Image (cartoon, rainbow, N blue to C red; front, side, top):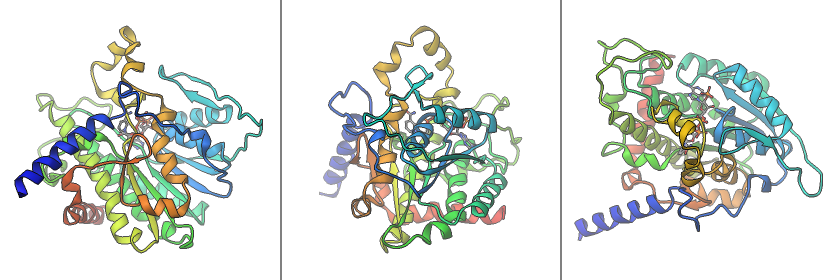
Amino acid sequence: MGIISTIFTWIWFQLDLIVHSGFPVFFWVRPRWSIDDVPDQSGKVVLVTGGNSGTGYATALSFYYAGAKVYLACRNEQLAREAIDQIKKGGVIGLNGFTQPKPAKKDGTRKKGVVEFVKLDLSDLESVDQCAQEFLKKEEKLDVLFANAGVMASPEGLYTKQGYTLQFGTNVLGHHRLINLLLPLLLSSPPTHPSRVILTSSAGHASAPNGGVDFKSVVRDPSDPITREGQQPKQGKNEKMRWVEYGQSKWGDIALAKYLHNVYGRQGRLISVAVHPGMVATNLPRHMSLTPYVTKFAPWLFPVVTRTSDIGAVNQVWAATIPDHDARWISGQYLVPYRKVGIARPDLQDDKKIEEVWNWCDEQGKKWA
Ligand SMILES: NC(=O)c1ccc[n+]([C@@H]2O[C@H](COP(=O)([O-])OP(=O)(O)OC[C@H]3O[C@@H](n4cnc5c(N)ncnc54)[C@H](OP(=O)(O)O)[C@@H]3O)[C@@H](O)[C@H]2O)c1
């Protein structure tokens, strides 16, 4: 019986993974909601990691035009400032990456909020500390923290400044530290309106190793030099590991969301959700060698396999803006396209493994305090 139910669960997970991947071919899986539909967010303070690009940009745009104060937490100040200019002009990212003006709302009243830059390099824990310090100096509350930034399929041999593999170090360890440092502020919101932490995960979490995270594999071998993103990593490494590494980082993101729910969400002190945004045309595949060729010779492929960033941002913006009593219901869950509680990989039901990820990140954090 045990084996049959395990097989059934596995098949069900794989089917759900395919249908709710966000591929446009599953035409009936549509958002039926837009990031322009968010209710008034005046008075809200929101921080979006990686807010200069892709789903992070669309998220920031949505909150700005709903009247919120939005912080773009980005590693590249110039790109962040350009994004802020675009947001103020109402630029929307299309499938080809260019921005077009955002159509004015029908009633002609477009509320505008405030948008600011704060420096954050998730691949350097010192920068994460500085970002949190700067934010805490400026703000006395944080309504929504979007742990959105990410790096995908980077070659093996690239590390964060402290020597963790680039994808796990950026996507999980960096975000864990930021959340941890901002946690007292997040938990200080009134119980009637708990703050929300939304982690952008991926259907790619399915490619994590058995059990989720292989902690040994995310720490640099001492014989390897610390090669940072943008530099040439040591050659001859395993290509498949790029995806396993991405998978375990996205598995780790869901684990962080579930841990926060288990510890604080169940007490009603915080709402924490992980989302898969769908297949979205963004800068994410920059580490894949085929990307420049597809962009140049087969741009028609984009609408076939991807959707735009504003659609990619639907799940996270929705989770961050639905009324509190509905949001409590989705806390601790993994959302798939669109606005649907999805099935995360069955090993994510193991609370011990989830706690292990949080505790391991805590332990690493102490080494670099
Ligand atoms: N696109 C998809 O189909 C898809 C599917 C599933 C999940 N996701 C997830 O969606 C999230 C957003 O990605 P996207 O698709 O919008 O890609 P994107 O356009 O490449 O945006 C990623 C953002 O993360 C930032 N970032 C990367 N490394 C960073 C670091 N060390 N410190 C601070 N920021 C850093 C990037 O900054 P720079 O601009 O400076 O590089 C960029 O702003 C990611 O977590 C990704 O895993 C995307």
